[in-house]
Length: 392
Image (cartoon, rainbow, N blue to C red):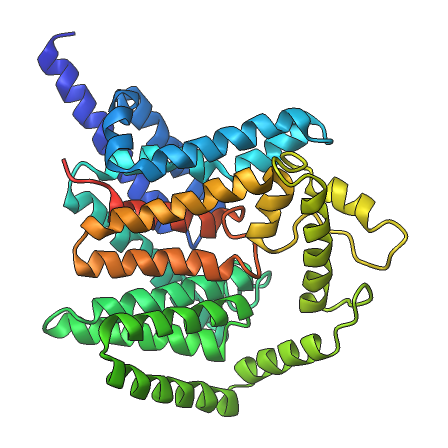
């Protein structure tokens, strides 16, 4: 094959990779199977195009990718000392594949600003369609039997509505008619989140992202006033929305009535799991119990107690800590720290959006294992790459 034909083939493969990646971004909030399919296609096209040769440049420009790969290597090595069968360890490792995909996505999106912009818009389009389906279902125009008013589990749905509201609010700074389009999208996402979607994780993430946005965009005096207005919005929603007030009241009740080792409520069980997880981390603090070990070691730890068994503590930090110890946690936080450091080279708008992506992951990971969860974990991967991938 001549050099001209080789170069043409590489460009075609890179094009296939970026298109597949944008489709993966689009399906992130909608379908785990299609998300996985297009992620695999993107990775295959990248490898065939010689993307592995791009790794040295990529690691220099985005060292967070290198640390993400080191974390994934630790997880792979931890299968060797896990108490469960290797096939079970591999099943857990597969859920963290976004760490392995990080160099692929960064490399494909470093081809130019147009690709990064398309990836963001593809993800937002998927979120808007998810929101539209929710409204259609709420008004009995569409039947989503399994998940109520959504195609996806309520925790996942509410998380993406919170992210959509934050992103649309930033987009509303656009001039002309686009400003009103994005403000409308933001309002629709907030209404969906507070009046229709029952996910408390999304409500919490929404509050965190809103406070971040106000901090990013306003002076101290205006920020204080905005906090008052935002509080008034939440109070109004509490008084007028059975969905929001019901979930808040339920959370308060579960916390106030919590009895260690005896609770069967959502929050109460989490408290028990977190307590056991801390105990398990102390047993093997450095490298943890191994990949996929959580269910096994947790079951042993709660033997002869009334604590419900689980394969996941619904807290990413504890989930990583139990399986991979302090080394795993240090690598995880180092990825985040390096991304924030890399964001200093971005424009103000992109830097603020990156901070929102990171905060959404960190805040949501308090009540759920978001990096482990496929859709939210891939959101973090795709959108951080769409903002941080270095220009040629």
